[in-house]
Image 1 (cartoon, rainbow, N blue to C red):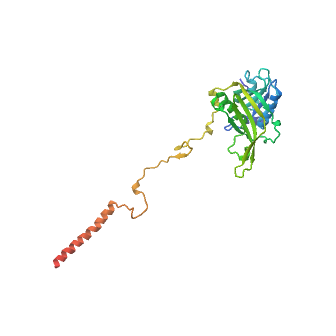
Image 2: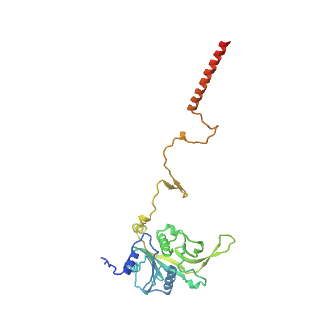
Image 3: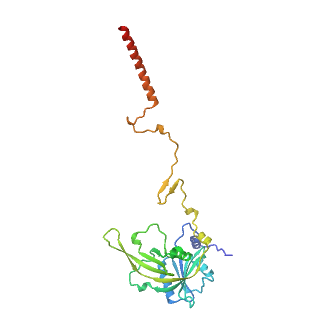
Length: 314
């Protein structure tokens, strides 16, 4: 059983309250962990990817003797201690040279892990140009059929989105689309490229966009995988009831997104409906015909009496 420690200070209470589950979670924190034996390439990759993730990143300075696919307790302990749900572990050995393990946790338990081998790496310092501002939200671009067809590549795409997307925002201004990350799956390799978007004059309101590579640049190969079951994955994606939009009655949407509403009304007597008054369109009712007949009948009676009096006088 896990021992429950009650906070003794206000600072401890605030720290525990900040770690409690929330309806809208904050930006996920990523841990960058060096293994017991790492190459110079892996160390540089961890440092530069940590710079892309700042300020929502924790870089471990000491080496840690970990084997994520064999024993996961140490990773789960680090996750609980640092309140982090993403990690990138780097190691190097004769059997698996230049090795990266990228993963995420759910409720401080391992959810997904994917092992990637580094085939080629080009540092951002090899590109002699201006870099993006730290903390800039990147635009993620995925190309390749494998990201949409194969299960392992689908989870890898979801993992990349979780790792690099940054804070969730509703609107992004055009000048804010400065950093572009491209992920391509071609011939069993994953190519990661980092670009800086430049807005040039085009003579119109819409600027001309040019891409300038700023690094880092990686070519990766997928090795081992540890994927969550479908039930656990659905639990991790579950949305709280408080955040679900309430269903509105008598409102529907068609294929094109047009909103249609249904209005319920009482039955109306169209006979009493007021229309535009025009003599040509005026309808003659029974009452009007009866009144006319009543008016014409005394006139006929008078004419008959007059005719009779004229005959007598003659």
